[in-house]
Image 1: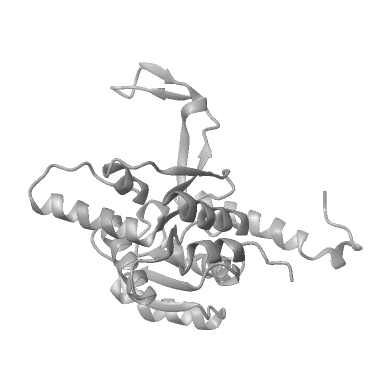
Image 2: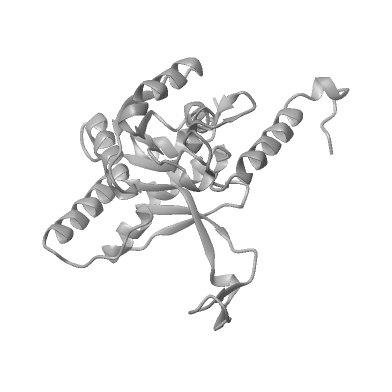
Length: 265
């Protein structure tokens, strides 16, 4: 029988877990609720994100990292939408790195060691595709570390004072980093532990804003898994409308029987 996308990658990498980061407050989005709990199409953003990993045959376990007061809400969402792969809900820390490490540690605990692959994904990127998840699993198994990223579309400039352009960065060298960011469990555990060791010793460390940065701090390469801007992160108020539009298009394409058997152009 032909294997579905992701099954071969799972065999190559062994145990595969997805850590979904949902502890952020989403202050730039505004509104009364964190963006992962905002609604589009009658469902929460988080439910769409979880569903992508639930349906992927290569993912064995899902761990959600959230604020302490939201654990019950996360479990309710999982129950309502049939997220059977949920293995744990853990609490986030003060920084993204703290929250990521909490999820990674739980993944290693569930795996019974550090063998396997972990995909770390923002809960506010609900449009991630099966292809991107499959490629992340494969690339992490092959190279140890990869980040999803999209080529820059606009011209990128530098400016020291924010008023006058100092220079132009060649667009072909610029990528916008997204998630998932995926790793061999043993490697990302080592990277987090090394960061904490150096911080405890008083070393002045650069702020780490993504998991791939921890690997680069070890002096190791991080592969790029090419994506596009459809895998966007909800960040500002207008993004929820963008998501609603994307979901409407997706729904329309998946309901050809209501269009005389034809998809819209």
